[in-house]
Length: 124
Image (cartoon, rainbow, N blue to C red; front, side, top):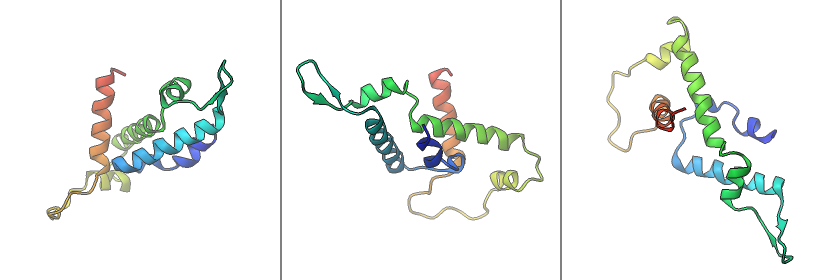
């Protein structure tokens, strides 16, 4: 499918909110419904694919799982980098100021740790 690489360009560095994740899943299901089209039942009625049927068709490889795997690959690449590389320096940098009082912004590294714990729970 050509749409996934276009939609996920640069996803290795994204820190996504739950709302953004839901929007991506909705978009992916919309595209899949266009690809797999409605089917006609034995009684002549037409029905679109349910979310569960779509997951079975794509073997549960959703766009979010793809993004998480890409993020983990990029994190492994960053870990292996030399310490003189700018990306490595920025990843290891600790700010000297405290975070603001409001809700903290999402951090990429925290999401990578969450992705890793999910991967370990699945046993992959």
